[in-house]
Image (cartoon, rainbow, N blue to C red; front, side, top):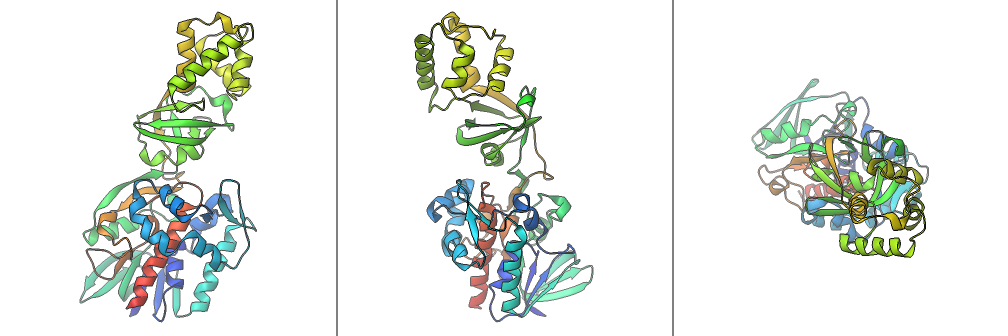
Length: 396
């Protein structure tokens, strides 16, 4: 009999255990090692948080900002950075990495906290088959026997990177206790574009504006062999679905009218100059991008600005400002960094991570219907939600 059992030995589960005081804690992990997904995050470099102020941090969780608010204020990125015992570096984008640029550094810190805490047992290669509750106790049936606890914490992650063991087990456990599951889907994932014409630009990037229905995004777009990736796509992918139309503005203007006026001025002020050269220079477009554009629009590279008629002008404006693309396919769970969807947050106490349906049942980390932008927000959520659950468990 244990005071607390935590299912899932990822960063959320481990950090939760490390912050529970004076209780016997058992962590059950189905892989042969803990935190396999943490170790590969950020290409093995582990962008574990972001330096943005906590009030800005909250805005990076889509429509879940109201739910995550209390948790992130309870244990913020500032709290995390004060607590860690290793050096870190901050990129221009505010991403925080261990100075070693090795995710093992982050894991070693968590494991040291667990060791110093004591009374925490970790069992690996142990798959949970079923969970039942009777007389205020949780009975966890596994491939290696049955374990009992007064308190149960589910931190099994989502469904992204199934090769690392994140196959959605926690969603099934939650269903058994009556919880609603928001349909899981890949998030922070690239997209494959129908009739894609930019394969030659693979590996290059541009700053763009992206419109999905009425939602607007701004950021770096990365061209791939079959579609798009980069922060602006990854961070908006939670709102995307197969077959959906998106609009991309390759010209950095707030609205089409401003761009149209600017473009007309450019043509008038450079009448005898090459349109090809002017577009590259004025709108910071690469040579290869403009070459593809001219080929698509069937423009000759020798075309002068004063030879552009109204119809051609509109074609250029639509190409650069209202370029429509259709998503053939979202990247699957095998390439998605995180999972959108999961345990419905309406059924979870936003301050404590405790189930509103079942006393002493907690959900933390990616198993919840919370997904953050790229840039360290998801690992920060793992730490923050784990700390909120641990703080509440410590009261009893």
